[in-house]
Length: 162
Image (spheres, one colour):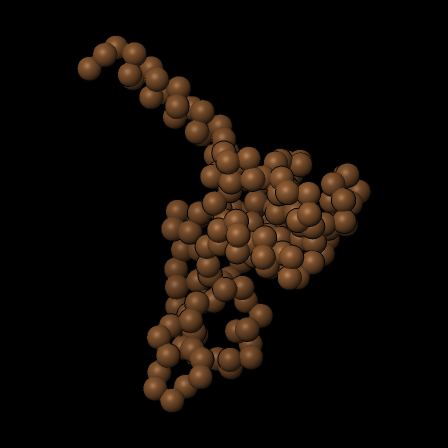
């Protein structure tokens, strides 16, 4: 094995860690017609990068403050590192998640439907554990769906909701 391989591996590891250390980044799609910002608030070993999506009003600090005071239009998992590497996203600003953005949200997941039922059964997930939900179906609909979106799906949803 050549001597330079370990050094190159350490270099690549450091480079990847530097790119990957992006919690708190406020991101914008490189396409100018996508009217939203993404706030990367958490990393999960199972699902990846959690982003909260806000309809954009501007990228100046005052506009970002206003946007982050609102509820996100949706929350999902999105491969942020890959999108940055492909130049699909750019970093607007970095703000460590504080207050309500510091906690990991609950997500819902629909299980295999039982015969004769239109939806459900439902499961809740907090990033670490999952449990069966036995309450009213209307109450669980407020939680975001646990899903990983690619850039095409994410942009499509943004264009639909913003």
